[in-house]
Length: 274
Image (cartoon, rainbow, N blue to C red; front, side, top):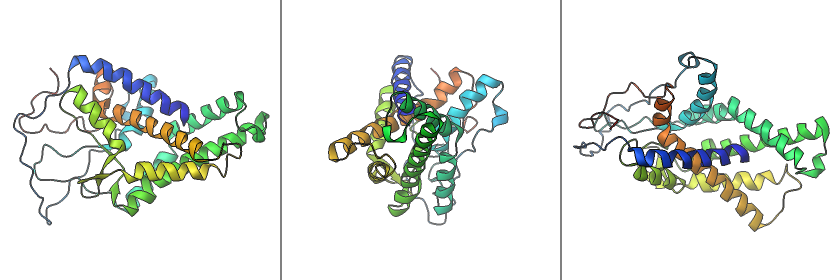
């Protein structure tokens, strides 16, 4: 996933610079007072995913494939309903999230692209060249994607009762939202929507990197090379989180449907555009 992660960080930085000068949706002028939800109060389900039929035209469907991958792990607190909390993901939900992320078409395209680049640069020389070498590189990439999703969407989120999704801020200045997205690599949400250290990001990434040594026999061993691969992965995740934060603005710019576009506004927020 090296190429797509790097592309995500570059796109996020470029888009962040654009919206920095354009402004962002204003923060609520009279935000509702935070209250402890009643144990009997029903939770709120996030907005449904945008369906393929909602994307009009081939180019929009291509953009939608990337957008759906971003939105699958993106949600936000129900600001329009004071006192309500999002429904937590149970074990079954986390398993389905892992399955959908691993089998996403964008995942397979990224694996195929990275396998081609790896073969052209003669990485993992023990795999050889030709169709057999490419197949081994593709298989290693698929194993890597599956292990990353397993550790970061299912295993560690279950152990630490952590929500693997990114909780969008959705209002305030572009700088505030950008920094909020960046800090997700260290601050995550528990299943009850309270904050905690993002154990999933660091333990999940480290576990997947260590496991990758078993199917990448030519990888350099040792703490240094492993730490570098962990750093690259976290850097890519930061790029994706920044894109998740600003995806509604990007979607509006290109007239694409996006998740939650028909949700009611929070009290006192007003229009989302200046």
